[in-house]
Length: 345
Ligand code: KG4
Ligand code: ZN
Image 1 (cartoon, rainbow, N blue to C red):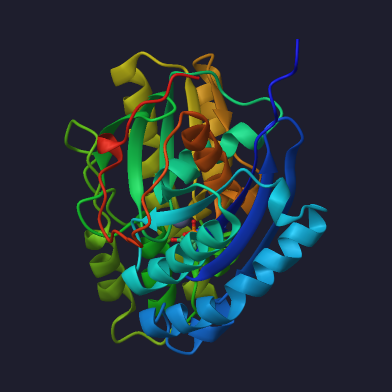
Image 2 (cartoon, protein in one colour; image 1 turned 180 degrees about the vertical axis):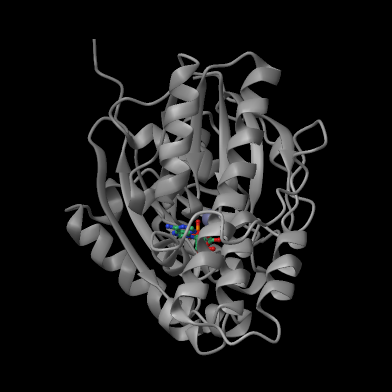
């Protein structure tokens, strides 16, 4: 009997400030992935400037696609489809990737599929050698999102709770800014926190006193603002505040993640998004989830932050299930994760 052909796809990501391309083969695995981060471009502005992001994607994406195909030793006729991030994200930035993906697919006679960016984050862990079984709980913590999600299968997602205001990464970045740290301040704040003194400051753990899985981080930012206002910030003071901020965020995320495991009766937790790089969060979750007999899974660090490999994983699953878009070029700023079509794998 003839063996079923192994699907090979190109994937493109451009939802925010990372331009990325990847090539994934169903049997051969990830053949190539390239990322160009625009972080230097936006640093002077203290945050992502949407119009600059779009313009830079236009400059970067096509060369990235070319290099990724070269890395993968793949010519366009060897591809079976193209996946691209169709939302949620910055509309202008999304449109650059969507237009490129759609145009290449048209020129090469391939199907194209628009992928939900958060589904990409949720499935990035499938690129690891020992992925979690379904169902599991995912804690998605990035600069733009903070959600707890029950992942029953590919495409079968239930949002258990989410932030009412700032995302966890945003809370790190905004408080870091108050401490005079450059954007994005999360990793820098985490470094300072290592040298902070325990108990020097105490910031609120938002929403912990209430039942449920909703989160909120804007109050923390206000508390930090009060703590630093009118004070000459010595290096030690900065470190002490950084430590207390990190403690408050990590505590909140840990308690809510454990509550989500309790609420669903599940033992396996996946952490995805840039804040998943935080060492204290990793240590705390490993200890707490481990002591309950569960396990915590992470995509490797480069797949925690925005990348095209995760878009390829989601796109391959959807193309394989026969999904593809028409010739329209669309981008969605908002897109409910729960509205996606479940896929039986
Ligand atoms: O997933 P990601 O690249 O998200 C977005 O594009 O939104 O995550 C970036 C976020 C930033 O807010 C950054 O400050 C935060 O993740 N981050 C960290 C650490 N590394 C990255 N926050 C705390 N500790 C870290 N080690
Ligand atoms: Zn992301």
